[in-house]
Length: 98
Ligand SMILES: [Fe+2]
Image (cartoon, rainbow, N blue to C red; front, side, top):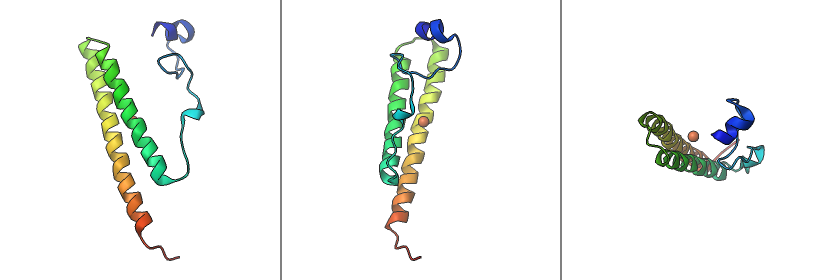
């Protein structure tokens, strides 16, 4: 966090662990709901993995508890996207009459 603090104090400035700023280019969307939901599910798993890596970097029990809570949220997000994927597939497989 030292590099972030030196340039941005405690201000929000989204960037990755290497300091590369966040851009909208990170958002992947194709317009195909099946593809985009899979992309979202992969993003949730990547977030879970990142929290696990952060947990491995500390032995502070308070930080570990907070990161564990955030990690669990990513698991829930993954599950909700998965449920949505099933609903979308069900909808797309129905015969539609307009
Ligand atoms: Fe998430």
